Length: 259
Length: 251
Image (tube, rainbow over all chains, first blue to last red; front, side, top):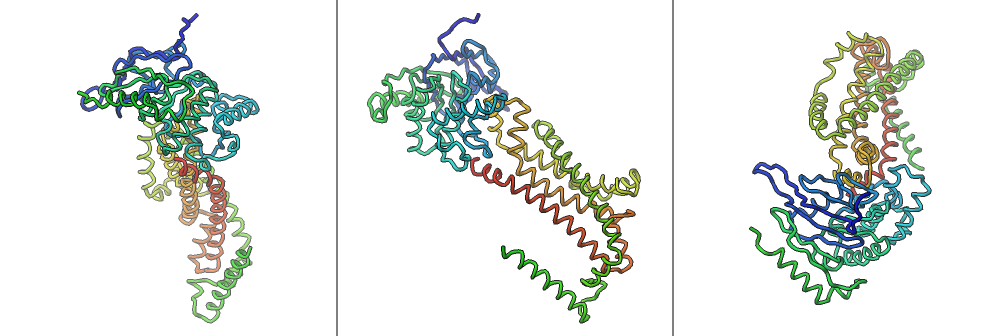
């Protein structure tokens, strides 16, 4: 019997360092965080603060040199696609597969019967609003559509946790703003816990329940901020004083000269 | 649909002009041959050339099969492991730079003057470029695809077979193209150097006797083999052509 924990993600003293020509480089220094069930958590920080590395470690794609990660109370050292879905900055769709085939690819890899996996993939395409584009090839889709396919692929195995590594960074601003609304809807429908890494402070605040602010050299968490914006979030809130104040508070944390 | 009639007309005009220039004595038959000389060579020794064609085509088929299958299999095996490919790729490029023809007499000593030495020589010439193209093709695909595949639960074998090789296909097909032309060249070349049968052998034989009609007949048969090989490759490229464009479009 494992101990029941309400936290989907628990990171304990996670460290990551590797040797370079000028000695050991500390990418992450004793990072600890918890993410509660169903929460939307953003991680922000300056370039090189190790936020993407932290996400990779949480996803089991990279191994920490110290500390441990528990997902649902179980220690993680390799990808667990049944527990964790990952969406990258680029959609990374396989160009010869249709949108539907890309979404069902994780199921095909496990040898699930065609009918079951196609039905599941169609459900997810509907969730991301791409029912009419099931048979389109990636090059026929816009950047935002491709990233929605990637989100559907990340959710197809019903993971409790969805990790997103700057998923909207490559999109233009209008598309990105539209994707925020879509993502919040998708999240409400799938009930997944989300850890979202981003450069954009507005994005971080608008989407999240909680924000971890990181600093660089060594990469570490310097602040945990609760976002007191009601849900559902609406586009009007982008102009709300609370959001602007939070954004500025984070900016001042990040912009402080680092030693 | 007007392409084919036009092609036939152009061909007929060229052939007629060739024959005309030979008849009026402008073209030396010893150097340029003539359609009528090729025709009479075909009537006289067509059976020999047909047998030779079968021998040469058979050698090429086996050599191509070895070069394609062996080259791709070896390339995938090496390309799938970054360290292995870093070590092996320069060796493959080095071998390709060697004039393999210097090894041909050794092959004849080992395997005899019959078809096995032609097959071995042709296969060796085609193997290395196919293997190198496959190694480089797999090595240079975007590593983020492999990470994505790992994240969605692909096993190491599935990452290679269902992601890496598929993404590398355009590069692999270009390698097949280079390898195929090298196989065709090398088989003919080896037959011309030392053999007892095959189209290359008869071209070389009749050239020594100044039977230009026979030489041109042999050349036409080699062209047929090259055209067929090219058609197969083009069909293959067309089937994969979509994937090539898409891979670039999505990035």
